[in-house]
Image 1 (cartoon, rainbow, N blue to C red):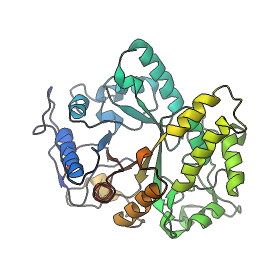
Image 2: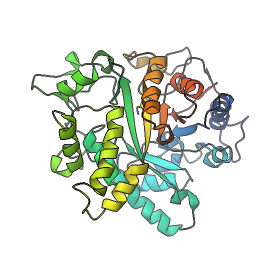
Image 3: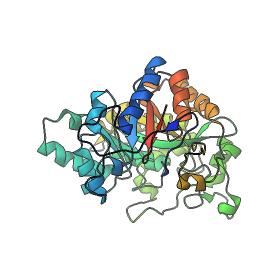
Image 4: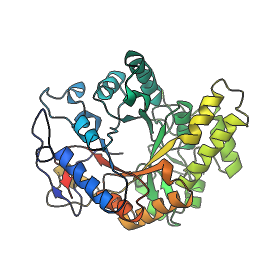
Length: 377
């Protein structure tokens, strides 16, 4: 996920949010916006969408914002059947503040820290049903512990018993949903497997490479996200074993959605009947891997409109396939794999979410938001 204000083709801008104690659909943009998305989804037989707002819009005071800053109305949204899962919180005390707003889950680079905070909160409030079913979402697999969006990062997220793996996708030349956060393989994280120089000057966009060539060309094992991020493969035995089975040049070779599905099943088997079955946490790890969900982003920016923020206008243009191709590819892979009951599709570009609701109504949608003003349908 990235940080930018919202503007989407086919949506007009809503009004700015005014502080209020009892928000209604007519007076609160967050609520009116999500009611519009809910109405659209239900009109097409789709599931009720979720809201995934930036964490600072849920608990403003915890992030140093003025005390009178109006927050996302979590309870009012939940009363409408709309679940709220913010992104991306890594500080334990900020996690605690966001959790105490009553949200349904939290996306984090540090699922290990989030699990610790949850244990403490559950001990303090053992009868809170939301805490019992709280979504622990490992952002990019849990990039605070392993290089992001790689098999070892997903393995680490599963090791932390994350109930959801969050990730990002582009579409390759062979119409595969490649996993990566940026629209190109970022030299900050990736290097050429053959040792030749790789920089932003010769960067390769996901839309311009096949899935096979991506796995032959890159190893994405660079460390750049703090001292707790490790690329020691002794910490990733499942990734090493799976990479050997898949004939990958490295466990840190770029992966893709269908391969991630296979990896998670491999992980479950590794701890139930394979080499990891004697691990002290083997039963919990296997059980969790059998049910873990996938929250998958279409990595495409909304088009710039007259209402777009200045920050939005400064972003580079998309170097991706079009929204329909994104949806046809990703939702098609999910459907073919029989994973519609374990996947959701998220995006800042609401064009893709509208298409998912209209064409693949069995797959839930997550509306990613950064800040006001919000677009409305």
